[in-house]
Length: 182
Image 1 (cartoon, helix red, strand yellow):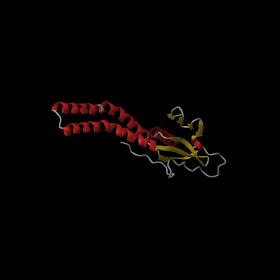
Image 2 (cartoon, one colour):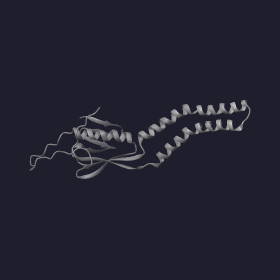
Image 3 (cartoon, one colour):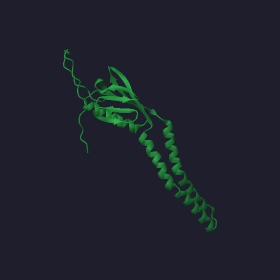
Image 4 (tube, one colour):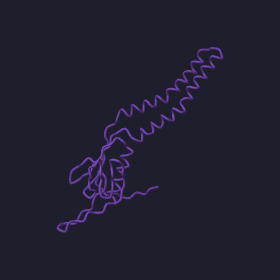
Protein backbone atom coordinates (compact mmCIF):
# COMPACT_ATOMS: atom_id res chain seq x y z
CA UNK A 1 0.00 0.00 0.00
CA UNK A 2 1.32 3.43 -1.00
CA UNK A 3 0.47 6.52 1.07
CA UNK A 4 0.10 9.63 -1.06
CA UNK A 5 -1.06 12.04 1.65
CA UNK A 6 -1.51 11.72 5.41
CA UNK A 7 -2.49 14.24 8.08
CA UNK A 8 -4.69 14.11 11.16
CA UNK A 9 -8.00 14.12 9.24
CA UNK A 10 -7.21 13.02 5.66
CA UNK A 11 -5.40 9.96 4.37
CA UNK A 12 -5.00 9.10 0.68
CA UNK A 13 -3.51 5.69 -0.09
CA UNK A 14 -3.39 3.39 -3.09
CA UNK A 15 -6.49 1.58 -1.80
CA UNK A 16 -8.66 4.09 0.08
CA UNK A 17 -9.42 7.76 0.71
CA UNK A 18 -10.20 8.51 4.38
CA UNK A 19 -11.62 11.88 5.39
CA UNK A 20 -12.65 12.47 9.03
CA UNK A 21 -13.09 8.76 9.65
CA UNK A 22 -15.18 8.11 6.51
CA UNK A 23 -13.54 5.71 4.04
CA UNK A 24 -14.13 5.49 0.30
CA UNK A 25 -12.42 2.59 -1.50
CA UNK A 26 -10.39 3.91 -4.42
CA UNK A 27 -11.54 1.06 -6.67
CA UNK A 28 -15.16 2.23 -6.35
CA UNK A 29 -14.51 5.85 -7.38
CA UNK A 30 -15.51 6.70 -10.94
CA UNK A 31 -14.47 10.32 -11.23
CA UNK A 32 -13.10 13.08 -8.99
CA UNK A 33 -13.61 16.83 -9.46
CA UNK A 34 -13.41 20.02 -7.45
CA UNK A 35 -15.50 23.15 -6.97
CA UNK A 36 -14.49 26.60 -5.87
CA UNK A 37 -16.80 28.27 -3.41
CA UNK A 38 -17.44 31.95 -2.81
CA UNK A 39 -14.88 34.35 -1.45
CA UNK A 40 -14.35 34.88 2.24
CA UNK A 41 -14.68 38.66 2.48
CA UNK A 42 -13.24 38.56 5.98
CA UNK A 43 -9.91 37.31 4.55
CA UNK A 44 -9.86 40.07 1.94
CA UNK A 45 -10.64 42.69 4.60
CA UNK A 46 -7.78 41.30 6.70
CA UNK A 47 -5.40 41.68 3.76
CA UNK A 48 -6.53 45.29 3.35
CA UNK A 49 -5.94 45.93 7.05
CA UNK A 50 -2.42 44.52 6.74
CA UNK A 51 -1.76 46.85 3.81
CA UNK A 52 -2.94 49.84 5.83
CA UNK A 53 -0.80 48.74 8.78
CA UNK A 54 2.23 48.60 6.49
CA UNK A 55 1.55 51.99 4.91
CA UNK A 56 0.57 53.82 8.12
CA UNK A 57 4.05 54.53 9.55
CA UNK A 58 5.39 55.52 6.12
CA UNK A 59 2.54 57.97 5.60
CA UNK A 60 3.08 59.37 9.11
CA UNK A 61 6.82 59.85 8.39
CA UNK A 62 6.09 61.60 5.08
CA UNK A 63 3.50 63.88 6.71
CA UNK A 64 5.96 64.69 9.51
CA UNK A 65 8.65 65.74 7.06
CA UNK A 66 6.13 67.80 5.09
CA UNK A 67 4.94 69.43 8.32
CA UNK A 68 8.51 70.29 9.33
CA UNK A 69 9.15 72.00 6.01
CA UNK A 70 5.76 73.77 5.99
CA UNK A 71 6.10 75.23 9.54
CA UNK A 72 9.29 77.19 8.73
CA UNK A 73 10.53 76.88 12.30
CA UNK A 74 14.07 77.10 13.53
CA UNK A 75 16.53 74.53 12.19
CA UNK A 76 16.55 72.76 15.58
CA UNK A 77 12.76 72.26 15.62
CA UNK A 78 12.71 71.26 11.93
CA UNK A 79 15.50 68.74 12.54
CA UNK A 80 13.67 67.31 15.58
CA UNK A 81 10.45 66.86 13.58
CA UNK A 82 12.31 65.31 10.62
CA UNK A 83 14.28 63.04 13.00
CA UNK A 84 11.11 61.84 14.72
CA UNK A 85 9.47 61.25 11.33
CA UNK A 86 12.44 59.21 10.13
CA UNK A 87 12.32 57.10 13.32
CA UNK A 88 8.63 56.44 12.73
CA UNK A 89 9.44 55.45 9.15
CA UNK A 90 12.24 53.13 10.31
CA UNK A 91 9.80 51.40 12.66
CA UNK A 92 8.23 49.90 9.54
CA UNK A 93 11.25 47.61 8.96
CA UNK A 94 10.77 45.04 11.73
CA UNK A 95 7.00 45.48 11.60
CA UNK A 96 6.93 44.96 7.82
CA UNK A 97 8.64 41.57 8.02
CA UNK A 98 6.11 40.40 10.58
CA UNK A 99 3.14 41.72 8.58
CA UNK A 100 4.42 40.39 5.24
CA UNK A 101 4.61 36.93 6.82
CA UNK A 102 0.89 37.13 7.70
CA UNK A 103 0.09 38.44 4.23
CA UNK A 104 2.04 35.62 2.58
CA UNK A 105 0.26 32.97 4.68
CA UNK A 106 -3.06 34.58 3.82
CA UNK A 107 -2.41 34.09 0.10
CA UNK A 108 -1.16 30.52 0.62
CA UNK A 109 -4.37 29.60 2.46
CA UNK A 110 -6.56 31.35 -0.08
CA UNK A 111 -9.75 33.33 0.24
CA UNK A 112 -12.22 30.71 -0.97
CA UNK A 113 -13.73 27.49 0.18
CA UNK A 114 -12.70 24.44 -1.85
CA UNK A 115 -14.67 21.20 -2.25
CA UNK A 116 -13.55 17.82 -3.60
CA UNK A 117 -16.27 15.59 -5.02
CA UNK A 118 -16.22 12.01 -6.27
CA UNK A 119 -18.62 9.74 -8.10
CA UNK A 120 -18.94 6.79 -5.72
CA UNK A 121 -21.36 3.96 -6.40
CA UNK A 122 -22.96 6.07 -9.11
CA UNK A 123 -23.66 9.10 -6.88
CA UNK A 124 -21.75 12.34 -6.33
CA UNK A 125 -20.27 12.41 -2.83
CA UNK A 126 -18.56 15.34 -1.10
CA UNK A 127 -15.18 14.05 0.07
CA UNK A 128 -13.63 17.22 1.47
CA UNK A 129 -14.45 20.88 2.12
CA UNK A 130 -11.76 23.27 3.31
CA UNK A 131 -10.79 26.92 3.16
CA UNK A 132 -7.06 26.14 3.07
CA UNK A 133 -6.09 26.29 -0.61
CA UNK A 134 -2.56 24.99 -0.06
CA UNK A 135 -3.74 21.91 1.83
CA UNK A 136 -6.56 21.33 -0.65
CA UNK A 137 -4.09 21.38 -3.53
CA UNK A 138 -1.86 18.83 -1.81
CA UNK A 139 -4.78 16.50 -1.11
CA UNK A 140 -6.26 16.89 -4.60
CA UNK A 141 -2.90 16.10 -6.20
CA UNK A 142 -2.54 13.04 -3.95
CA UNK A 143 -5.97 11.81 -5.07
CA UNK A 144 -5.00 12.42 -8.70
CA UNK A 145 -1.87 10.34 -8.29
CA UNK A 146 -3.75 7.57 -6.48
CA UNK A 147 -6.42 7.42 -9.21
CA UNK A 148 -3.85 7.50 -12.02
CA UNK A 149 -1.81 4.68 -10.45
CA UNK A 150 -4.60 2.40 -9.32
CA UNK A 151 -4.84 -1.08 -10.67
CA UNK A 152 -8.04 -2.00 -12.51
CA UNK A 153 -10.47 -4.11 -10.53
CA UNK A 154 -10.73 -7.61 -12.03
CA UNK A 155 -14.15 -8.20 -13.61
CA UNK A 156 -16.30 -11.02 -12.26
CA UNK A 157 -16.27 -14.17 -14.37
CA UNK A 158 -19.99 -13.76 -15.12
CA UNK A 159 -19.55 -10.38 -16.80
CA UNK A 160 -20.74 -10.47 -20.41
CA UNK A 161 -18.82 -7.47 -21.68
CA UNK A 162 -15.18 -6.52 -21.20
CA UNK A 163 -14.47 -3.85 -18.60
CA UNK A 164 -14.21 -0.33 -19.97
CA UNK A 165 -11.07 1.61 -19.08
CA UNK A 166 -11.44 3.75 -15.99
CA UNK A 167 -11.51 7.47 -16.68
CA UNK A 168 -8.99 9.60 -14.84
CA UNK A 169 -9.56 12.63 -12.72
CA UNK A 170 -11.24 15.61 -14.32
CA UNK A 171 -14.66 17.08 -14.90
CA UNK A 172 -14.56 16.24 -18.62
CA UNK A 173 -14.05 12.55 -17.99
CA UNK A 174 -11.08 12.47 -20.34
CA UNK A 175 -8.16 10.22 -19.67
CA UNK A 176 -5.13 12.01 -18.26
CA UNK A 177 -2.16 12.41 -20.56
CA UNK A 178 1.41 12.78 -19.34
CA UNK A 179 2.89 16.27 -19.41
CA UNK A 180 6.50 17.17 -19.76
CA UNK A 181 7.85 18.84 -16.67
CA UNK A 182 10.77 21.27 -16.52
